[in-house]
Structure formats: structure tokens, C-alpha cells
Length: 146
Image 1 (spheres, rainbow, N blue to C red):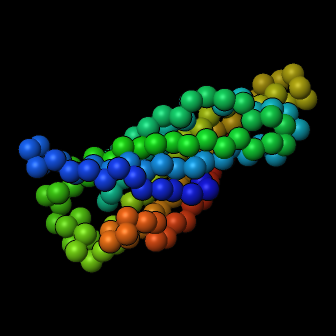
Image 2 (cartoon, rainbow, N blue to C red; image 1 turned 90 degrees about the horizontal axis):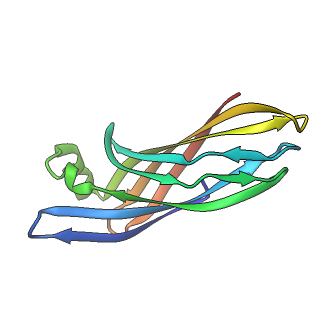
């Protein structure tokens, strides 16, 4: 996870909806001597364990000892949280905390021949400054399954 940008905050008085988009700049880094072929990835965004958005990123290949960068746009359905007392309190205090998780599954060929499955899960905690719609704090960690 390189950076996150908040965009397109929109509201509709006719439908009582409030939505925004999160654009995540993500890198798939392959430190191996063989290429890493990964499938489409799924990014999910949560507020207090409530799913508020999901998006898929396309499959691709990270060549040996190379990094591939891509943007993932997640449309957040913030209107689902309007009746949540904690969310309302967070809006008033100016800090809203979200969590995100991205799962990328793929294969690397060991010794150039034997395919080996590898899954990577990236989890992040994000704090949004409501007054500026900017990211105030971000921490991420990853888990790798071979």
C-alpha cells in the first residue's frame, strides 16, 4: 500500500445517500528470481466490522525482482452508516477510522518449472480527517501463505 486518496464525496438529498471513493495506490513487489503471476485481487473496506465497500483489481504478472503498481478504486457506501451512533460521533470529532484488507493470490514457478501457490493478505488501518477529507494516519501489515 503506497498511498490512499479520497475522492468524489457526494450526497443526494433525494435518496439520503452519502458516498465517496477511495483510490489506493498498491504495489505488487516480487523479490523472487521467478515471475509471480497473480489473479484478480479483492479489496474490502470496513467501518467497525461493517463492510462499506469492495473492489476488484485485475490480474497481472510481476516479473522477477520487479514491482508492479496499480490503482484500486473502492466506492464507499457511507450512507449505510448514517444511523450508526459511533459513526456520527466520529464525524463530529473529525476522525473516522476504517480498516481495509486486500487478498492477492498467485503462482510463482520454482526453479522455472514447478508452480507454487502464494497468497498475500494486506491489512491496513486508516484514519480519515473529516475536515480535509485526507488521510491522517495509516498503518499496514501483510501476511504471506506459501
